[in-house]
Length: 513
Image 1 (cartoon, rainbow, N blue to C red):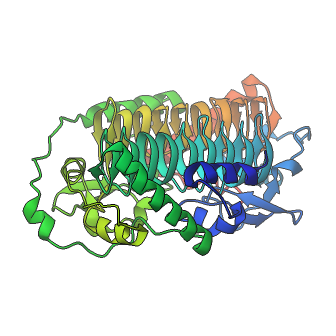
Image 2 (image 1 turned 30 degrees about the vertical axis):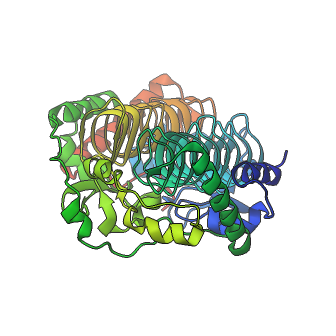
Image 3 (image 1 turned 180 degrees about the horizontal axis):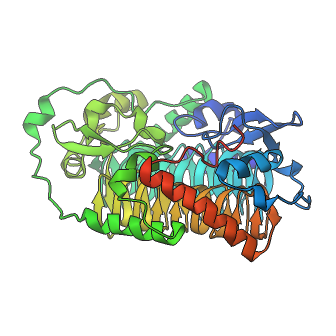
């Protein structure tokens, strides 16, 4: 089955029949989440690039153009005095890479950061998944995903963003452990729901109103058919966020319970940061608050917002959150009350009338706190996470701060899209790193600094596009004794600058400038 056939089978599963091709919906499927950018490699070939952190003057290679067997000239280790001298010495081997297809992957068309995945098209940051198109940040055995972003363990989806373990869903956002949802937001543990918001453990609901199973099935069939015709005609669908500012009527009628205050302990998180610095740098460099600005340089910031009811909540502009009407934001407690509001539904309703009716229930919980959680401070999305500070998304993780998407991690700081990693500082788009600093697009590496697009490194610095190195600098193995001598010089400079200036000018994305 090719990717277009996979899309059609999913469309038929959701809508009953399919009279549209995958690529006809490209612009619709790409909406509201990161997409693959087209770049040119140094040889002039077109490549796909998923990350947005590269400098404007970056030199790119296609992953297919990398010569992993290339032998590089050795470095004059006696001339290495600081980071800049290393930077100058390795200038000819610093290339960033697009169209990275890693691990056991195949049948990839215009993808980047694809790992152990098959049948992927126009997508980036896809891990252990198959039949994925026009999507990003999809992982952990997800299948048949079209126009998806930021989720795991899900199957047969079209235009779904921000979810875990959802199946057979269309236009479903910020939901977990659900099945057969259609145009829903913020639902958890639900099945067979349409045009509903902020529900929990509900069945057979339309517009938040639970119905008898047979009546639900009858109305659903009509609405699904009309929705299919709308998509096939317009090559798009209604926006779940396109509502005017709400009236004040609900503020008067809905009573919001006082928010439960939980005790927090910032010192535990600060101690974790100090511990991580001792592990990575050999000594502490200061408190987390002193280094906060530096750690957040390349992250999606977590912000505080006023809810519809005048309370405070956290959100970020990542993915679809930037499109949520700010006047319609809710906190957890508010969403639980608003879920009790429902529209009137009858057999005469059509798609247009339902869309008009749901305006009064279309409010959006923007924070998330699901699962077993503890001591999370100023963190936006918490899903089985503990001991975090200013993290956009902490999922199955603990002791993390100033990061975007710390997933199955611990002791990770200033990092973006880190998975199964620990004791790392300022690492990006990487998997299974241990005791690392300034790594990007790397996997299965330990005790390394300033490396890019590398696999299976141990005790390496300033390496680009290589595999299986030990005690290497600039892609050249120099032996343990020489390596440790130079590493001592580099770490001394890093520590001194971070302690005095509270930042380091050099990072993995500016070694060519």
